[in-house]
Image (cartoon, rainbow, N blue to C red):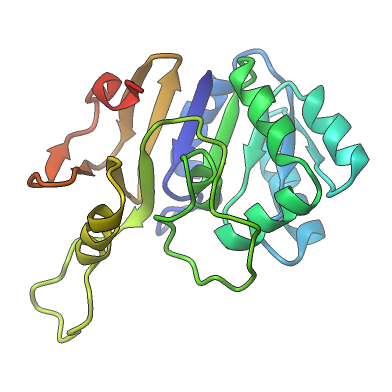
Length: 233
């Protein structure tokens, strides 16, 4: 598999995908046409237009997937796939209802480049249980593509010791997940992404990631770190 799993699609002070575009172009290689999966947002037409405009500046054409048989055919013959961010529950529900989840997984496992941002990387995990999103719709279940054997929490935010907020921190939420689920969780901060080639993976971008395991203290992984150990199934 050839995956690029980005915590976010827009960094503060920059345009859409600007911070990760060199990595995206490297991941795409010779591919000059991608299928964009817009189902995490309500206005799919506008979302598709946004992706098409951004990639056109890179000389890359975009086909926007639809939730029907035409969308299935587009995914099955895609040179590359990009699953955009938004609400993960909505994304998964649409893919389930349209029966596109299996074709998408099959395409990624065949070696077709899979790019995801935010909700699109939750989808690459075994389940979507570590998303930050509200369950605005109810999918048939939480099982996702399982392209990687660990969970990801995108947009991971460290606790602010000066904050007056008394609710759970992101770390608290992940610890709650680990009380019920024995899976590694990667807290992927904004500005970071995971590049995965088969059994080999690497943390890239500008910031470190935080790795959580049941019964162990969290571990910081700096940019440039290998994550091969996390890919062992």
